[in-house]
Image (tube, rainbow, N blue to C red):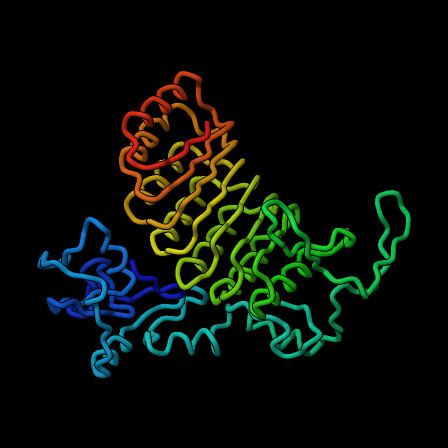
Length: 382
Protein backbone atom coordinates (compact mmCIF):
# COMPACT_ATOMS: atom_id res chain seq x y z
CA UNK A 1 0.00 0.00 0.00
CA UNK A 2 1.38 3.39 -0.98
CA UNK A 3 1.93 5.73 1.93
CA UNK A 4 0.17 9.03 2.47
CA UNK A 5 1.58 9.70 5.95
CA UNK A 6 0.11 12.81 7.54
CA UNK A 7 -3.27 12.95 5.86
CA UNK A 8 -6.23 10.83 4.84
CA UNK A 9 -8.55 11.25 1.90
CA UNK A 10 -12.07 12.66 2.19
CA UNK A 11 -15.05 10.85 0.69
CA UNK A 12 -12.91 8.12 -0.83
CA UNK A 13 -15.90 6.38 -2.39
CA UNK A 14 -16.58 9.47 -4.50
CA UNK A 15 -13.04 9.65 -5.93
CA UNK A 16 -12.92 8.67 -9.60
CA UNK A 17 -11.86 5.02 -9.89
CA UNK A 18 -9.56 6.01 -12.79
CA UNK A 19 -7.46 7.91 -10.25
CA UNK A 20 -7.07 4.89 -7.96
CA UNK A 21 -4.44 2.17 -7.90
CA UNK A 22 -5.90 -1.31 -8.40
CA UNK A 23 -3.60 -2.74 -5.72
CA UNK A 24 -4.15 -0.39 -2.77
CA UNK A 25 -7.45 1.14 -4.01
CA UNK A 26 -6.26 4.66 -3.14
CA UNK A 27 -5.32 7.62 -5.37
CA UNK A 28 -2.01 7.06 -7.14
CA UNK A 29 1.24 8.11 -5.45
CA UNK A 30 4.39 8.23 -7.63
CA UNK A 31 2.45 6.31 -10.24
CA UNK A 32 3.97 4.15 -12.98
CA UNK A 33 2.56 2.56 -16.13
CA UNK A 34 3.21 -1.01 -17.28
CA UNK A 35 3.91 -2.21 -20.81
CA UNK A 36 0.25 -3.29 -20.94
CA UNK A 37 -0.77 0.32 -20.14
CA UNK A 38 -2.09 -0.22 -16.62
CA UNK A 39 -1.28 2.27 -13.83
CA UNK A 40 -0.19 1.54 -10.26
CA UNK A 41 1.56 3.30 -7.37
CA UNK A 42 5.30 2.76 -7.61
CA UNK A 43 5.48 1.25 -4.11
CA UNK A 44 2.49 -0.99 -4.75
CA UNK A 45 4.02 -2.35 -7.95
CA UNK A 46 7.28 -3.11 -6.11
CA UNK A 47 5.37 -5.04 -3.45
CA UNK A 48 3.35 -6.90 -6.06
CA UNK A 49 6.28 -7.95 -8.25
CA UNK A 50 7.89 -10.81 -6.39
CA UNK A 51 10.26 -13.31 -8.06
CA UNK A 52 7.41 -15.77 -8.54
CA UNK A 53 4.82 -13.16 -9.51
CA UNK A 54 5.68 -11.03 -12.53
CA UNK A 55 2.21 -10.56 -13.94
CA UNK A 56 0.02 -7.48 -14.19
CA UNK A 57 -2.54 -7.40 -11.34
CA UNK A 58 -5.27 -6.44 -13.81
CA UNK A 59 -4.75 -8.34 -17.08
CA UNK A 60 -2.21 -10.95 -15.86
CA UNK A 61 0.18 -10.33 -18.74
CA UNK A 62 3.86 -10.81 -17.97
CA UNK A 63 5.54 -7.57 -16.85
CA UNK A 64 9.06 -6.64 -15.72
CA UNK A 65 10.44 -4.00 -13.39
CA UNK A 66 12.54 -2.43 -16.13
CA UNK A 67 9.36 -2.01 -18.16
CA UNK A 68 7.67 0.24 -15.57
CA UNK A 69 7.68 3.89 -16.62
CA UNK A 70 6.83 6.93 -14.46
CA UNK A 71 3.85 9.05 -15.48
CA UNK A 72 4.90 12.65 -16.16
CA UNK A 73 1.73 13.93 -17.83
CA UNK A 74 1.15 17.29 -16.13
CA UNK A 75 -2.63 17.29 -16.64
CA UNK A 76 -3.04 13.89 -14.95
CA UNK A 77 -0.78 14.84 -12.03
CA UNK A 78 -2.75 18.08 -11.67
CA UNK A 79 -6.03 16.16 -11.35
CA UNK A 80 -4.52 13.93 -8.64
CA UNK A 81 -3.24 16.95 -6.75
CA UNK A 82 -6.79 18.33 -6.58
CA UNK A 83 -8.07 15.36 -4.55
CA UNK A 84 -9.15 16.58 -1.12
CA UNK A 85 -7.71 15.26 2.13
CA UNK A 86 -7.74 15.86 5.86
CA UNK A 87 -4.68 16.55 8.02
CA UNK A 88 -4.46 13.90 10.75
CA UNK A 89 -2.43 16.23 12.98
CA UNK A 90 -4.86 19.16 13.23
CA UNK A 91 -7.99 17.66 11.57
CA UNK A 92 -8.25 20.51 9.06
CA UNK A 93 -10.23 19.25 6.09
CA UNK A 94 -10.70 20.16 2.44
CA UNK A 95 -6.96 20.43 1.73
CA UNK A 96 -5.96 19.62 -1.83
CA UNK A 97 -3.32 16.93 -1.97
CA UNK A 98 -0.99 19.18 -3.94
CA UNK A 99 -1.10 21.73 -1.13
CA UNK A 100 -0.71 19.33 1.75
CA UNK A 101 3.05 19.57 2.17
CA UNK A 102 2.74 23.36 2.20
CA UNK A 103 0.09 23.02 4.93
CA UNK A 104 2.45 20.90 7.05
CA UNK A 105 5.49 23.12 6.47
CA UNK A 106 3.82 26.50 7.01
CA UNK A 107 0.33 26.25 8.50
CA UNK A 108 -0.48 23.15 10.59
CA UNK A 109 -0.66 24.29 14.25
CA UNK A 110 0.05 20.80 15.58
CA UNK A 111 3.28 20.14 13.73
CA UNK A 112 6.16 19.66 16.14
CA UNK A 113 8.49 22.67 15.89
CA UNK A 114 12.08 22.80 17.04
CA UNK A 115 13.37 25.91 18.79
CA UNK A 116 16.43 25.99 16.55
CA UNK A 117 14.17 27.12 13.72
CA UNK A 118 14.42 30.64 15.11
CA UNK A 119 17.53 30.62 17.25
CA UNK A 120 20.69 28.58 17.42
CA UNK A 121 20.56 28.55 21.22
CA UNK A 122 17.08 27.33 22.08
CA UNK A 123 16.33 23.77 23.17
CA UNK A 124 12.58 24.30 23.16
CA UNK A 125 10.24 22.06 21.17
CA UNK A 126 6.49 21.99 20.87
CA UNK A 127 3.54 22.66 18.58
CA UNK A 128 3.81 25.44 16.00
CA UNK A 129 0.87 27.27 17.57
CA UNK A 130 2.86 27.53 20.83
CA UNK A 131 6.07 28.81 19.21
CA UNK A 132 5.31 32.52 19.25
CA UNK A 133 4.38 32.49 22.94
CA UNK A 134 7.68 30.74 23.63
CA UNK A 135 9.70 33.21 21.57
CA UNK A 136 8.23 36.09 23.57
CA UNK A 137 9.83 34.75 26.75
CA UNK A 138 12.78 32.70 25.46
CA UNK A 139 16.11 33.69 26.99
CA UNK A 140 17.90 30.39 26.74
CA UNK A 141 21.46 30.08 25.60
CA UNK A 142 22.10 26.73 23.98
CA UNK A 143 24.88 24.55 25.30
CA UNK A 144 25.48 20.87 24.83
CA UNK A 145 25.34 20.59 28.59
CA UNK A 146 24.52 23.65 30.70
CA UNK A 147 26.77 24.35 33.64
CA UNK A 148 24.71 23.64 36.68
CA UNK A 149 24.90 22.08 40.11
CA UNK A 150 22.88 19.01 40.90
CA UNK A 151 22.46 17.27 44.21
CA UNK A 152 23.03 13.55 43.72
CA UNK A 153 21.57 10.68 45.70
CA UNK A 154 24.22 11.05 48.42
CA UNK A 155 23.35 14.77 48.72
CA UNK A 156 26.76 15.72 47.36
CA UNK A 157 27.06 18.64 44.94
CA UNK A 158 28.22 17.85 41.43
CA UNK A 159 29.08 20.38 38.75
CA UNK A 160 28.78 19.38 35.10
CA UNK A 161 31.27 21.17 32.90
CA UNK A 162 30.03 23.01 29.83
CA UNK A 163 32.88 21.61 27.78
CA UNK A 164 31.81 17.96 27.94
CA UNK A 165 30.08 16.76 24.74
CA UNK A 166 26.82 14.81 24.90
CA UNK A 167 28.15 12.09 22.58
CA UNK A 168 31.33 10.07 22.39
CA UNK A 169 32.53 7.38 20.00
CA UNK A 170 33.85 3.93 20.76
CA UNK A 171 34.40 0.53 19.14
CA UNK A 172 32.28 -2.40 20.30
CA UNK A 173 31.75 -5.95 19.06
CA UNK A 174 32.59 -6.77 15.42
CA UNK A 175 34.84 -3.68 15.34
CA UNK A 176 31.86 -1.39 14.69
CA UNK A 177 32.34 2.20 15.82
CA UNK A 178 29.27 3.56 17.64
CA UNK A 179 28.21 7.01 18.72
CA UNK A 180 26.83 6.83 22.28
CA UNK A 181 25.86 9.11 25.14
CA UNK A 182 28.86 10.29 27.15
CA UNK A 183 28.76 8.16 30.36
CA UNK A 184 30.30 11.04 32.31
CA UNK A 185 27.06 12.99 31.91
CA UNK A 186 24.91 11.12 34.42
CA UNK A 187 22.27 13.85 34.56
CA UNK A 188 21.79 14.58 30.88
CA UNK A 189 18.08 15.10 30.23
CA UNK A 190 15.72 13.31 27.89
CA UNK A 191 15.20 16.54 25.96
CA UNK A 192 18.93 17.25 25.59
CA UNK A 193 19.56 13.76 24.21
CA UNK A 194 16.62 14.10 21.83
CA UNK A 195 17.78 17.40 20.39
CA UNK A 196 21.36 16.18 20.07
CA UNK A 197 20.22 13.00 18.27
CA UNK A 198 18.02 15.08 15.97
CA UNK A 199 20.99 17.22 14.95
CA UNK A 200 23.28 14.22 14.49
CA UNK A 201 20.86 12.58 12.08
CA UNK A 202 19.78 15.58 10.02
CA UNK A 203 23.39 16.74 9.67
CA UNK A 204 24.51 13.25 8.55
CA UNK A 205 27.07 13.09 11.36
CA UNK A 206 26.45 9.55 12.52
CA UNK A 207 26.28 6.07 10.97
CA UNK A 208 25.89 3.90 14.10
CA UNK A 209 24.01 5.27 17.12
CA UNK A 210 23.56 3.52 20.48
CA UNK A 211 21.21 5.05 23.09
CA UNK A 212 21.12 2.00 25.36
CA UNK A 213 19.66 2.58 28.82
CA UNK A 214 18.53 6.18 28.31
CA UNK A 215 14.86 6.92 28.97
CA UNK A 216 13.20 8.71 26.04
CA UNK A 217 9.52 9.70 26.19
CA UNK A 218 7.16 8.82 23.31
CA UNK A 219 6.81 12.55 22.56
CA UNK A 220 10.56 12.87 22.12
CA UNK A 221 10.67 9.72 20.02
CA UNK A 222 8.44 11.58 17.57
CA UNK A 223 11.20 14.20 17.23
CA UNK A 224 13.88 11.58 16.61
CA UNK A 225 11.61 9.74 14.17
CA UNK A 226 10.98 12.91 12.17
CA UNK A 227 14.73 13.16 11.54
CA UNK A 228 14.80 9.54 10.36
CA UNK A 229 12.35 10.25 7.54
CA UNK A 230 15.13 11.98 5.57
CA UNK A 231 18.03 9.92 6.90
CA UNK A 232 20.89 9.38 4.46
CA UNK A 233 23.65 8.20 6.78
CA UNK A 234 22.42 6.33 9.88
CA UNK A 235 22.71 2.56 9.34
CA UNK A 236 22.44 1.11 12.88
CA UNK A 237 20.09 2.42 15.58
CA UNK A 238 20.18 0.70 18.98
CA UNK A 239 17.42 1.61 21.44
CA UNK A 240 17.80 -1.06 24.10
CA UNK A 241 16.14 -0.23 27.44
CA UNK A 242 14.97 3.17 26.19
CA UNK A 243 11.35 2.84 27.38
CA UNK A 244 10.14 2.22 23.81
CA UNK A 245 6.41 1.48 23.85
CA UNK A 246 3.89 0.91 21.05
CA UNK A 247 3.35 4.64 20.49
CA UNK A 248 7.08 5.20 20.05
CA UNK A 249 7.23 2.26 17.63
CA UNK A 250 4.45 3.86 15.59
CA UNK A 251 6.52 7.05 15.22
CA UNK A 252 9.63 5.10 14.26
CA UNK A 253 7.92 2.72 11.83
CA UNK A 254 6.06 5.42 9.93
CA UNK A 255 9.28 7.33 9.33
CA UNK A 256 11.48 4.44 8.20
CA UNK A 257 8.93 2.79 5.93
CA UNK A 258 10.49 4.07 2.70
CA UNK A 259 13.52 5.91 1.39
CA UNK A 260 15.62 5.14 4.47
CA UNK A 261 19.21 3.98 4.88
CA UNK A 262 18.69 2.18 8.18
CA UNK A 263 19.94 -1.42 8.07
CA UNK A 264 19.64 -2.51 11.71
CA UNK A 265 17.01 -1.56 14.32
CA UNK A 266 17.67 -2.81 17.87
CA UNK A 267 14.76 -2.54 20.35
CA UNK A 268 16.02 -4.81 23.15
CA UNK A 269 14.18 -4.99 26.49
CA UNK A 270 11.39 -2.45 26.03
CA UNK A 271 7.59 -2.43 26.28
CA UNK A 272 6.61 -3.46 22.76
CA UNK A 273 3.45 -5.58 22.41
CA UNK A 274 1.70 -7.10 19.39
CA UNK A 275 0.27 -3.65 18.68
CA UNK A 276 3.78 -2.33 18.14
CA UNK A 277 4.58 -5.38 16.03
CA UNK A 278 1.69 -4.49 13.74
CA UNK A 279 3.28 -1.08 13.09
CA UNK A 280 6.59 -2.81 12.32
CA UNK A 281 4.85 -5.25 9.99
CA UNK A 282 3.33 -2.36 8.01
CA UNK A 283 6.80 -0.85 7.80
CA UNK A 284 8.36 -4.10 6.57
CA UNK A 285 5.86 -4.26 3.71
CA UNK A 286 7.42 -1.11 2.32
CA UNK A 287 10.98 -0.99 3.61
CA UNK A 288 13.43 -2.94 1.46
CA UNK A 289 16.69 -1.96 3.16
CA UNK A 290 16.33 -3.06 6.79
CA UNK A 291 18.23 -6.34 7.19
CA UNK A 292 18.20 -6.80 10.99
CA UNK A 293 15.26 -6.35 13.38
CA UNK A 294 15.98 -7.13 17.04
CA UNK A 295 12.98 -7.35 19.40
CA UNK A 296 14.42 -9.42 22.24
CA UNK A 297 12.84 -9.27 25.73
CA UNK A 298 9.65 -7.38 24.94
CA UNK A 299 5.96 -8.27 25.43
CA UNK A 300 5.38 -9.98 22.09
CA UNK A 301 3.08 -13.03 21.90
CA UNK A 302 2.31 -15.76 19.35
CA UNK A 303 0.14 -13.32 17.40
CA UNK A 304 3.10 -11.02 16.92
CA UNK A 305 5.22 -13.96 15.71
CA UNK A 306 2.53 -14.87 13.19
CA UNK A 307 2.32 -11.32 11.81
CA UNK A 308 6.11 -11.02 11.47
CA UNK A 309 6.49 -14.37 9.72
CA UNK A 310 3.67 -13.65 7.26
CA UNK A 311 5.19 -10.34 6.19
CA UNK A 312 8.66 -11.91 5.88
CA UNK A 313 7.35 -14.70 3.69
CA UNK A 314 4.92 -12.72 1.57
CA UNK A 315 6.20 -9.14 1.34
CA UNK A 316 9.79 -8.68 2.47
CA UNK A 317 12.87 -10.13 0.81
CA UNK A 318 15.56 -8.09 2.57
CA UNK A 319 15.29 -8.96 6.28
CA UNK A 320 18.05 -11.43 7.16
CA UNK A 321 17.94 -11.57 10.96
CA UNK A 322 14.94 -11.50 13.31
CA UNK A 323 15.57 -11.66 17.07
CA UNK A 324 12.62 -12.57 19.32
CA UNK A 325 14.68 -13.93 22.20
CA UNK A 326 13.22 -13.74 25.70
CA UNK A 327 9.64 -12.88 24.79
CA UNK A 328 7.97 -15.05 27.43
CA UNK A 329 4.48 -14.69 25.91
CA UNK A 330 5.65 -16.78 22.94
CA UNK A 331 4.76 -20.37 23.73
CA UNK A 332 4.18 -23.73 22.03
CA UNK A 333 1.25 -22.40 20.00
CA UNK A 334 3.68 -20.54 17.74
CA UNK A 335 4.86 -23.82 16.21
CA UNK A 336 2.55 -23.57 13.17
CA UNK A 337 3.91 -20.14 12.33
CA UNK A 338 7.45 -21.52 12.57
CA UNK A 339 6.53 -24.44 10.30
CA UNK A 340 5.05 -21.98 7.80
CA UNK A 341 8.29 -20.00 7.80
CA UNK A 342 10.44 -23.10 7.34
CA UNK A 343 8.49 -24.24 4.29
CA UNK A 344 8.08 -20.84 2.64
CA UNK A 345 11.09 -18.78 3.70
CA UNK A 346 12.85 -16.89 0.90
CA UNK A 347 15.43 -14.63 2.46
CA UNK A 348 15.62 -14.83 6.28
CA UNK A 349 18.93 -16.34 7.39
CA UNK A 350 18.58 -16.36 11.17
CA UNK A 351 15.70 -16.49 13.67
CA UNK A 352 16.50 -16.26 17.38
CA UNK A 353 13.83 -17.65 19.74
CA UNK A 354 16.03 -18.54 22.69
CA UNK A 355 14.54 -18.14 26.17
CA UNK A 356 10.96 -18.03 24.90
CA UNK A 357 8.33 -20.20 26.58
CA UNK A 358 8.84 -23.27 24.34
CA UNK A 359 8.90 -26.82 25.70
CA UNK A 360 11.76 -29.17 24.86
CA UNK A 361 9.37 -31.31 22.79
CA UNK A 362 8.33 -28.39 20.59
CA UNK A 363 11.98 -27.45 20.11
CA UNK A 364 12.73 -30.99 18.93
CA UNK A 365 9.81 -30.87 16.48
CA UNK A 366 11.02 -27.54 15.05
CA UNK A 367 14.57 -28.86 14.58
CA UNK A 368 13.26 -32.03 12.91
CA UNK A 369 10.86 -30.11 10.66
CA UNK A 370 13.63 -27.74 9.58
CA UNK A 371 15.91 -30.64 8.59
CA UNK A 372 13.16 -32.21 6.49
CA UNK A 373 11.45 -29.26 4.85
CA UNK A 374 13.73 -26.21 4.85
CA UNK A 375 14.66 -25.05 1.35
CA UNK A 376 17.08 -22.37 2.58
CA UNK A 377 19.94 -22.09 5.05
CA UNK A 378 17.66 -20.72 7.76
CA UNK A 379 19.27 -20.94 11.20
CA UNK A 380 16.84 -21.17 14.14
CA UNK A 381 18.18 -20.61 17.64
CA UNK A 382 16.06 -22.28 20.33
